[in-house]
Amino acid sequence: MKIIPAIDLKEGKCVRLKEGKMDQETIFSEDPIATAEHWFSEGADLLHIVDLDGAVSGKPINNKIISEIALEFPSKHIQVGGGIRSFEIAQDYIKIGVQRVIMGTSAIESPEVLKDFSNSYPNQVVLGIDALDGKVKTEGWVKESGITPLDLIKVFEGLPIAAIIFTDISKDGMMSGPNFEATSSLAKATEIPVIASGGVSSLSHIKKLSEDKLIYGAICGRALYEKVFTFAEAVKTAESRL
Image 1 (cartoon, rainbow, N blue to C red):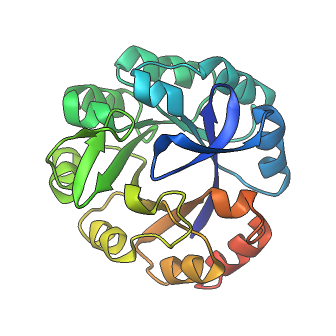
Image 2: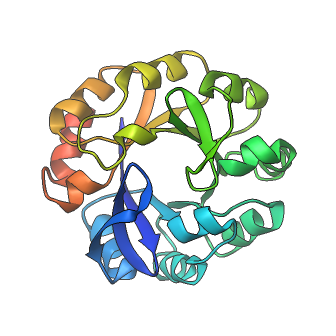
């Protein structure tokens, strides 16, 4: 199982939120490029970057910083989400060297955009599913869609989508563990690789996720920044299922 460090950008700084609430932030670094360099130097081969301001505003806000990271580390892989609501915006990110773009809100509000992009750029789009109480939320986790994650993946099954990132919003940043049951159920329901996100806060959480061979990866944020475990320890634990 792949371990993917996260960088959440808010007003140009690396932060972590609690339950996705923009007013409950912890700033971990004011230098996103140095933070990216740190995770790559630790051995990460994929970095998860979210433009939090972009997710709320509906358009890229921290894209200049993301572009600088992509240009600074051209041989490394990054996936970017937050405010990617059109084909053109997604394409702009690919052109600057981002390997994968994450679409969440547009999957609900403009599914044809995600479908068209996945067909034009196979395996370079990730379906972002952020759920609370079993229903997908959009626009930076503030708008209720009324759609379940299982219903949403049916819309895109069979398309060349790189992965699904599933986040239980109630777990995000809370250090209480991911929603194992919901993540596992989603992985069983689709052929698309599923990445767990939100609440991964101990090596035991990583071990439990890795025991489900259908789960492709886990995104780690606050626990890495607070040094609950190291990236190397996380990788070793994730690989122990082999």
